[in-house]
Length: 523
Image 1 (cartoon, rainbow, N blue to C red):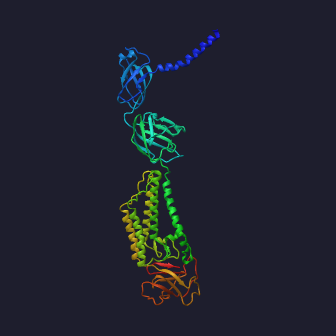
Image 2 (image 1 turned 120 degrees about the vertical axis):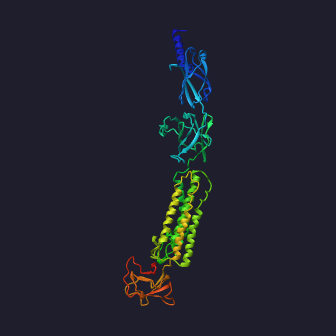
């Protein structure tokens, strides 16, 4: 072999030795432990990299989750380079670095690694937020509890027994880490002994279906199941669906009543379909009993639809929810009030018609006169409906199991309010209603003819005050044509012969009739 070939062979051998040397040395220069994982109080065998002088007093130092005193080593075993040692029972779960140190604390052998297994199963106390709503199609939540892994690598998180495969795991020793620490690698787990922060979970990608439960496993110990609510919908979705259902049902009723409403044209004036729902045809005024019935029906629809949407889309319970206690009684009071109001109208007659066209004042007045019992019933209805709907929508969609219970004293109070309203209808006299004028207005100076103005209607008092174009007609000019009697409480026709007639004016009714109790009718 030539000198150049010899030098080349030596160089290759030297490079091979240098390449393999460090790994072999590294493997030989580590303390070997058997077993490498055990529970507190167990016994492990420690093999040193080289035997030590038996006259030297040495200790085993364990550095990890627990603060432990150095453990003394039996000097008789040092010469063999292997010894056994009993671990403390108070060691916490986690990974420990093992080294052999002198009495002065100087390390004489290092490189050992020991894992202490969990002795108590992890427990889950709560999952927040509850429910968890998606952001960008993924969910992030925090699991609070006890006995989670000392290192994030020790925690096995499962949803419906399917492990979550995390792209990144971080151990948080001081709760200083956040989602930004994940650096966009999702799903991500930031773990500590009492908290697991989980970011960017997608159940659909993991083929996990609702309803869900979550467990945490540390080593071989598994926690009990905890319900995990990953909402399919957003927090506001059940409320939007509830109002959407109301709009759809209202739209259907609207379409059914639209043609009939178009044909309702008292005094040659058309009204919207919405107004038609609240108008009493007898008086052409807004009905308070209809208002409260419609409002309570709408409130019941919203509340029930909200409950159904919450349980199906958020809680993932596909079943019809129960009707809440007290709601049937409340609707019964509402329907009963409307029915009894109709009966009272048949017996005692309608309220006064007031102005020729309906207005919001009709809800609290009788023939243009404020009725305290109507005002009280109106206010109580508005407060009750708003309170009931607000209490329903304020409930968490993840936990709502029933509609707000109607308080036991609420239905009686509603009943008392309705009773006062009905008592007012029964006790109060009927009000005037004008159905026809002959001749028809407008009236002006020089009209009408000597025959006067005939007022035809209902509940007209023979002692009523009559105004033409805003000018009061003397009582002698208001008579009751035969065969009716001027001594009757009410008549259906009055004959008005004003001595003179003022010119018509804007916003002034052509004819106004005011009964002695103040109820009026205009046309």
